[in-house]
Image (tube, rainbow, N blue to C red):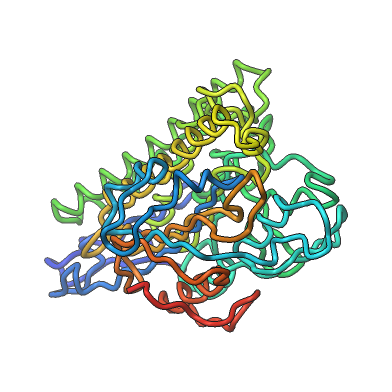
Length: 452
């Protein structure tokens, strides 16, 4: 059992220190803590503490307008294009990578279904079985290979989060099951993992309110639930009394951040109760950008508290028909623009908006202290799509950005690999660099160079 947070007078003055896996506890709830100075052994410094590497996988649906995404120059002299412009402030913490493909996303005799295959192959490199039934088959995904190894250090093996409803069932693309497009995470060849799209349910999974995802049950329980932080208030007071001033500040700042997230979720649920005609379940903010950033804040807190070291985030499911506030047309139909300049412009505006959400996540990770640096310093995010050109359903030259500071990555460059380089080669390399032992998987042919 993990050490209680009621250790008497922890810290250097007493010669004691808190265990890294210390939790605040009360009334059946528990709350993980960020790294505090009191968790550092006596006479050690924050720089001496090993900060774990976090892995993120960030998915864009329906491809991008590649002509306005791909930098013209290679190496360090490249310029950020219109679509990439939102992440330019993080230039030194990212690599723009060109040339990668998921060849098994192509038809290979199976006919229509490129969106389903794009989702199924993105992190697996395995051609999916064409079926509408329960006999789905693809391959284990890179995020779950990492989760299997890193779960021994954390409460949760991984988190799979998304912003598009996955309630759709049956066949969504050709004769492929909707599940192929709904997720990019596969625990095994026959076990796709559904993404959680409800922030309340994600929060409860992280912090202990229960497993139910029934909106009616959550709304009914809202009136009789106290804040999670109220459950652990007394334990927090006891802990704070034995900490130094810097740790007291960190603890207060962290608890305030968690309370802010919880209050935002409660507000969204109350708004949802007043708007019964909304298509999304209660708890999801009606504003897309607010919704996206709330879910990404949850990811940051999960990394900060080391609840998990693996998070997969889907900005949208493949074939997403979301309508954005500034565009009346649905995303997927627009991606089939037929070279119509007006439609292309609308898709570019969507692509820029999605890239802005990635920029928000990078900024939050950069602003969050972690050991001798920030969460961004100790993370690697593989960001991209299973399609490049959504109009032609191309599975080559995929838009891939590698962000973060872990894994001996040397950022600030656009690297162009040979045509048809398997994306799984990059995934294999990333896993190896963060210390996850892995055998070749999917269509891997070997590791890649030029990352650092």
